[in-house]
Amino acid sequence: MISQTLQSECQRVVSHLMQRHGWRLLEESAFAGRLLARAQREENAAPEGLTALAVNLYCTIWHEACRGSGSRRSRAYQELAHYLCDRALHKYGDKEMAHEIAQDALLLIFEQVESCRNPGAFMAFALLKLWNAATSYFRQRDRDLERVEPLPSEQTPESGDSSDGAPELVDRSTPLPEQETVARELTTAVMGRVAELVAASPRAQKQLLAVVYKFVQGYSDEEIAQALATDVAGVHVLRSRGLSRMREDTVLRQLAQNYL
Image 1 (tube, rainbow, N blue to C red):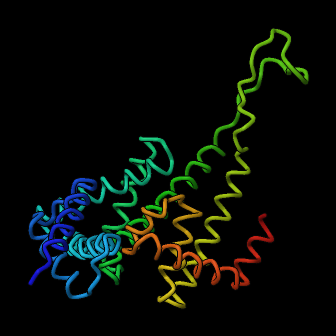
Image 2 (tube, rainbow, N blue to C red):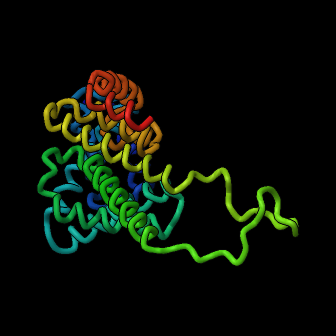
C-alpha cells in the first residue's frame, strides 16, 4: 500500500521545483508519479533525499529533450537558458553580462551535449559549460581592454588631494586589472588540473565539483546539492573528500605556491 505521507511529500517537492525553475517537460502529476515510484524503489523517502532524486530524474529528461528535436527540444533549451542566466546573474550581478555568458554556454551545450555521459548529472554538466563560457568572456574582455590606450591627461596631479577638492574617481577598493588577470589565470589553471583529475578518476567527479562550485563559483550548499543531485549533508561529505584529494595533488600545490 502506498504511503499517503510519501505520496504527498513527492507532490510537494515536485511542485516546488517546477515553480522555482519553470520546468515543464513533464506534467506535474506524471513527474510526481515517477518520483514516488523511484523513492519506493530506492527507499529514499527523506525530504532532502526526495529533492535530490527529483533533480536527478528531471535531469535525465532534460538531457534527452536537449538531444531530441522539435518543440520539445526548444522548450528544453528555453528552460536551460533561464537556469543558466539566473546562475550567471547570481555570480556576476550584471544582467547584460549574465545574458551574454549564458547564451555562449547554451551554444557550448548544444555542440557538446553528446559528451554528457551521465544524464542524471546534466545540471552539473551545464554549469561547467557556463564556467567555460565565463572564462572565454573575461579573456576576450581583457584582450579588448589591452587594445584601448588611455587618453593623455590634461594635467599631472600632485600627490595627495587635488587643489580644487574634487573627489577621486578611482575606487581604491576595486582590485587592479592585473590582479583580476592573475586571479583568472589561477582559476583557469586550477580548473584545467581539476579536469585532468576527473578524467583520471571519474568517480571523484562529484567530490571535485563540490569544491569548485563552492570556492570558485560561489554557490550555496543548497544550490550545489541540486546540481549534484544530493542533499546538503552529502555536499559536505563530497567537499571534504574533494579537498583532501586536491591537497594531495602536487600540481595544485605548486599552483598555489606560484600564484599566492
